[in-house]
Image (tube, rainbow, N blue to C red; front, side):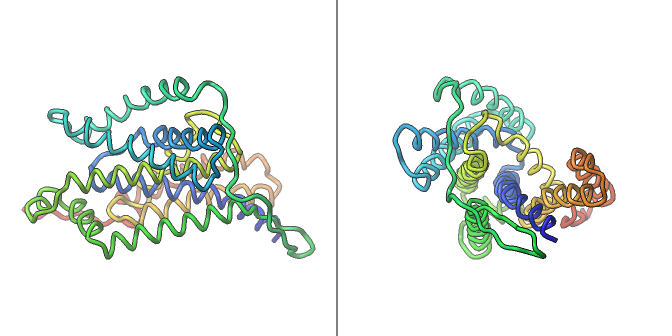
Length: 303
């Protein structure tokens, strides 16, 4: 039991990061009808800004991370307002190609701005919490618990805003039908700009959580694996809803951890190396039988 709980606690931080990245990608997809392939590098850029504030300006992590979030938010809004809107005939596919090009720009610019050294990062809170189960010690880091609290607060706040605020109503209307939303007086340009800015800020928080786990930003591609899992979570959960991808974002890291635990329990430790492969395979099988996603709905067109 103790071994199972230790494996469960280890995956808390990856779940938090994947959930926030998935929520950011979902917000953009629902309002702009495109996938932002540059989400990971924009998020990493925000973490680099936070690291600069930590190492050079001497700010605390609680001030540095919001500053990094603002920087990522500014880049994301710039992409939507300046690049997308000024491009002629930029459709969903064109936006995807543009974001792929942005990856090269940001990856090339980041070491020029911040230097080639690996920036050091800190934990939100130091220390561990330990207790005994069945005579064996179970440990969870305070940093993971704080990140869990931050993630829950962010997710609850966004879903409350989506449900009860005027902004949330505008987002849901734009996600349902952009042209109809414009006809009833909703400024969809403002909605999409806010959505991109929110996604950028969320990505920076997720990147800061990832950096706090290893206490450094290893490279500008630090968020790539999380972004891949977030895209898979969106497809598996179904982009038809906001909550579906978030639920899938919890299931993917959790399933990987359970496969690792099972392999070690039954005496097949090599199974842990295949954990994500198995998760991806199971996800593809689920999508095969339910292409709309686990929480998606079949679209019926009347002619």
